[in-house]
Amino acid sequence: MKKLLLTIGLGLAICLNSFSQNTTKTHTVTYTINNILELDFDNTTQNLSFTFATASDFENGKTNSSAAGLRVRSNKPWTVSVKANTPNFAATAGGDANVSANKLSVRKNGTTNAIPLTISDQTLATGAKGGFGVNTFLIDYLANPGYISPATYTLGVTYTVTAP
Image (cartoon, rainbow, N blue to C red; front, side, top):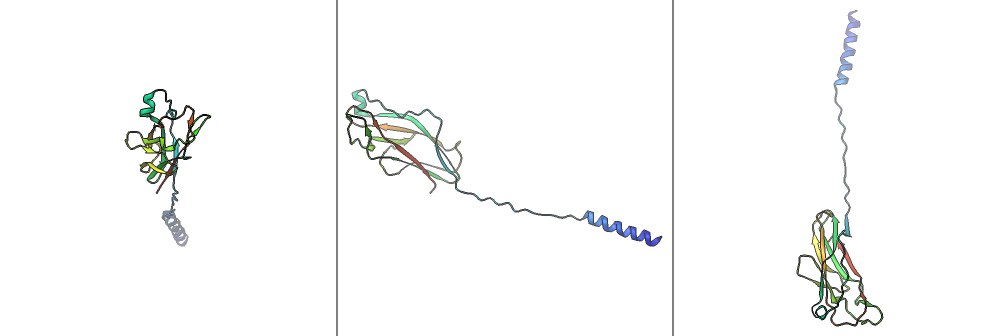
């Protein structure tokens, strides 16, 4: 009987010892971060047209303040550049053929440095990493075509965001 009790006691001790042991396992979690870089127009009302109706308009040019809004989403510092798609405005019948793109300038709203457009990228704005909530800004267009023939003139303008 003593042997039986000793055997049962030893078996219980082994079982209890195995239940009381702790086992720990570890995972290693890895982030793979790619470049995030996005440029979009925001939801502001766009004011992209100019009407030249008075002599003062031709003499002084016109400004569309807060003409449009841009927003950037990036996980790195960024630069927004601007350029004209063509060297000259396209004109409807009767218009002047060589109205240079530099007759239209753009600037970041709230600044004074207007950029006359060319077909080369020019820096418009820079910013820090973050989402649309912190990287949104308005742009102003300034037009001063001089005394050009009556017609409708159009010019494509391209904005590009890079993360240097």
